[in-house]
Amino acid sequence: MIARRCSLVGIRLLVSFGLMLGVVGNPTVASALYALRNATLKAFNAYLTDVESENSRTLQQGPFLWLDGLSSTDRNEALAKLKSGQVLLRRLSTKTAGRDPDVPGGMIHDWEGVVFIPGVSLDTVLHVLKDYNRHATYFAPDVEQSRIESHDGDSYRVFMRFRRQKVVTVILDTEHDVHYFRDSPLRVHSRSSAVRIAQVENPGEANEKEKTPGDDDGFLWRMETWWRIEERDGGVYVQNEAVTLSRDIPTGLGWLIEPFITNIPKETLEFTLRATRRAALGK
Image (cartoon, rainbow, N blue to C red; front, side, top):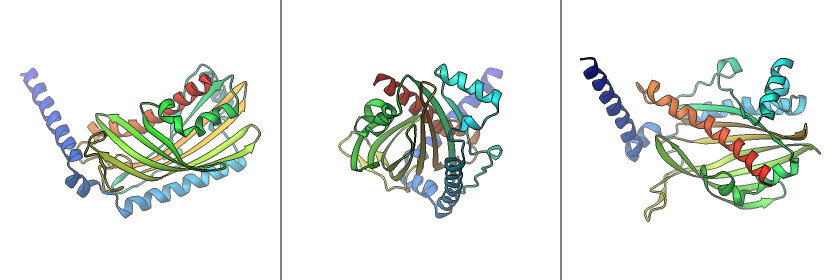
């Protein structure tokens, strides 16, 4: 009897999950349920304004790296982890971090991470980050294609095709405006904004096409990124904050689906920092 009940529960979960995937795979239904709404975008932009303000403040007043704002004990512990090769991550879109986004029809994901790359210079790391024509090599398999579309000094327009895989595989064609700023001989920060994000249908096939941005399955509607790079302690610290916007969780499936959607931003950020470290060490 117990085994039968467990089996029935499993079947219900599979059916519910299958229905969710069916909605994801149906463009008409997806458009009706998950199209980007003005209220969603307005809430995201309001959140983004707060993030920009905080980043401007810390660039002017410090700390340049978030770990330098920790207590002495926590900072020493964090530095020891970084020197051992770990990536430190923290989630900012929470009440305890002072940001509590209320986004109708959407979810904001705000993650910040830092990694230490020993024995390299600031310019070495910058060479990796600015080498966009090779990002599909440095950051594979998350980045499938990459190229510089235009370049003027420290400003870039970049194309990237992202692959996101977690239960389902999603391919996204994106364009980014990226600007680098030299704060001192040993410090640089950059600001990257995805100016276009289009989900790709049937990637790699003859009938491949892009969905209309904002009228898709809602896996990634917006992506904003801040990098801070500092050379010290015999290497380079690389810090990245990524704020993204996705659809919300289907009603009744939050407990099942939310871990998959919310884990992708965190895992992508950790992968990006590790790949940056690996590529810089390879130089």
